[in-house]
Image 1 (cartoon, chains in turn brown, purple, orange, yellow):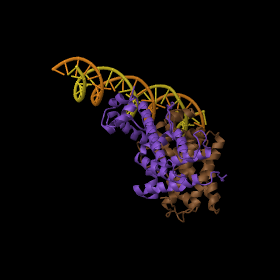
Image 2 (image 1 turned 45 degrees about the vertical axis):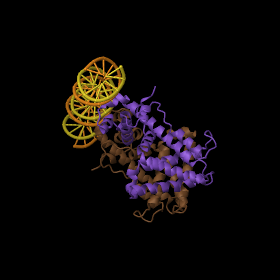
Image 3 (image 1 turned 90 degrees about the vertical axis):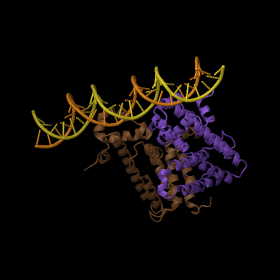
Image 4 (image 1 turned 90 degrees about the horizontal axis):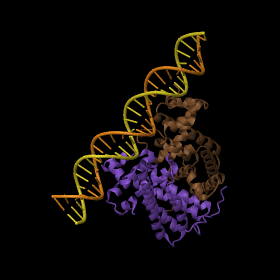
Length: 213
Length: 213
DNA sequence: ATGGTTCTCCATCATCTGATTGAACTTTGG
DNA sequence: CCAAAGTTCAATCAGATGATGGAGAACCAT
């Protein structure tokens, strides 16, 4: 049995894939309740019933979007892990931040959806498995910040969460922040990456026993 | 002419104030589209029409909530500014982070609403003045990180935004993050403050000319 | 008490949204 | 070519939601 999601991921030209991509954008911009399936259908110039035919109800479509993003992000992290494997910590962090930031700037709906899932409930919030937290543990391990997956200190964990959140925030909030700093799109991207590295690399490379109380 | 919002803020026991407080919580948890005025009314055990009588339509109520939060946050920042005035940079940052984090942990709907406004559109997004960006500039000035409000470098600006966002994220995302780090509520709060200071204070006190490229 | 004001709620409406049905059209396989 | 499966859409339905009107209750000043 091949799920609709797998079909869509295998053939990016299929209608299922096109619907999924549009749903990613719409859900990313407006959140679950703010988005309507009519918006998704209109963006593709198809009828609502066609959308139901391919993806079931709204909830199904949303869950497919979440799983799709989980999968993309997971693959991306595996890719980054391969690139930085074996390098010194400082280089690992530099490359990882650069790489992930570039990737998410190209796919802002990922950051949008992650943040919107973090920070607003969905009225009918059933158990939708959201793997980003697990990814964070994987990052910790691949960064060499923890010896095994089961033994990551809360302090390191929180710093990793902060790093990931910082990236997502700068990308999702670009429309809010860029007018403040008065930078064009390209310069904003550069400055964001610089600021991220400036703030977070020392946090990981300095004395691991925090002295701030 | 005294607006409904001013009335509510003056008398916390009034029905208007109670509605506003309930609306803050509901909008904070579910976002604009996810929240219904029925939820707000039910939380107070009143009828929907009573709610309309006091606050007009849903949009009006939401705007009142945003303005209310703007005002609270503004007052809080002024308070912090007074406390830290004249102290060395390191102490200013320490106190500011501690103080703001404590405050926002006690009023998580503020962080929720700020983030939900940052990262998801509202379908009918008219010009709703959202002053948090301006606050950020004020913070920069009060921290002594910029000589005047018009001359804050993008780099410092981005770091301040990152700091504010980090606080909001840890508070709004507590339900997501705390199970990961496996800490009780109180320890989580302590560890978050420690991590925030550990990451951000060096970023402001180290060499201001970033060398990460 | 009384008249006016403020406040509350029940009943109702219009609209939006998600979802279904059945007919028509297209593609596929033999 | 033809039948079956797959696909699309107009029409329609049900329910939720925001909003209004009017009747009655509570309150207040005189």
